[in-house]
Length: 143
Image (cartoon, rainbow, N blue to C red):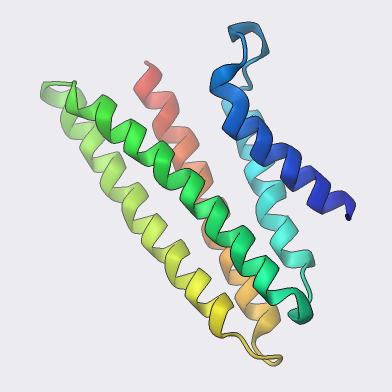
């Protein structure tokens, strides 16, 4: 296992197990952003021969954020007035960025030798953008 793959696995475990940890060990939004960037960068390390693994990893990363977006939607449904309107706007933005990441996953799936590098870079950028937007939205929800 490469160092980047190990970092990505640890990042995913931290994100998934974070809610189960005591409050004093919770990661910050910056930690999550950094780990999301590491996870997206890990996709870049895959060779075309490992395309199936790269696609599976990309789908898992996107699926994990899908759950987090649903959590934000549940929180938004409890809000009222301007706060609810702002939250709904952030969720619409997140869903648009998630759709863009989904298109990049499809590009990874269909990538040939000639388009592999471009497809990996495209997904990494789209995922990082989605993760950063999620972090910003989650921080707003905590206010």
